[in-house]
Image: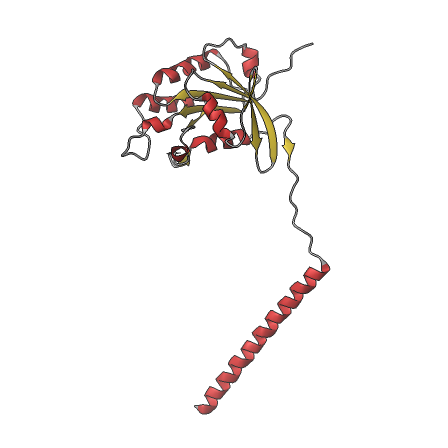
Length: 228
């Protein structure tokens, strides 16, 4: 029997770039489930929930081109403080065609290491600026995160756009994943006859109060005129 095509997320990056930390940060309240071929990620959005498989691989791992092309999302992760980790995923990208993936992300993790005590925004070296340009040219979305430092991660901004783990989650959640479970639509409660009657009565009392106020105002004006 033919093997089923792969789906889910393919996450590629060298050791120690924080791949598992990123998976854990995407669902901080749920322990990441590890399987023999990767992890299971729960996406819980406003409209659906989905169990998404995440296959983790190093840049040197043996992968078939057909398998790579079958993933819904490809996420290339590197350490924002180590150029060699970016060079590794760049070489990997040159070996495989990922154009069929609907979500294509280049994630610069450990952005907190680019900060000094006096800085509030990362100081990006020239090679990292080049990594941003490369991602744009290759039609990947570039995102900076600090997966293990939430206080920094939630404040990351690039060209006016929010970065961080939340941006990675938003990108993944924009996809209609196979097997997703749609949440029931929340419809407004129907207006009952009693509620409608109360609303009308309340409206009538407001109108009566307005009429009384207008009459009182007119009476006061008349008295002033008579005194004048």
